[in-house]
Length: 83
Image (tube, rainbow, N blue to C red):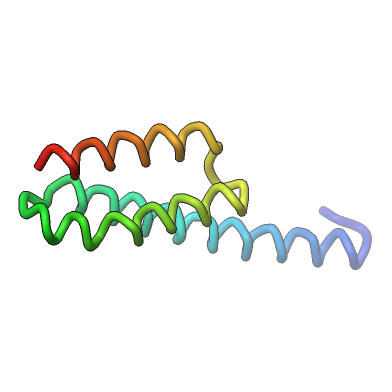
């Protein structure tokens, strides 16, 4: 167990950050899945910018790697344009 006040605070803080990261990541994964399931091009084009934005925010907060986000954005854009 931690012996210092700052270490105890760090433990609490890490839990809060971990939970927030988990929620953001799950929300993004759900949005990606929803985008992949769409068959209407108009709806997909409307949803794509918000999904790209979510991926960029995950990269900014170091939740996912920049290359993974780039690959996902590329694949999703390619899929939407082929509808």
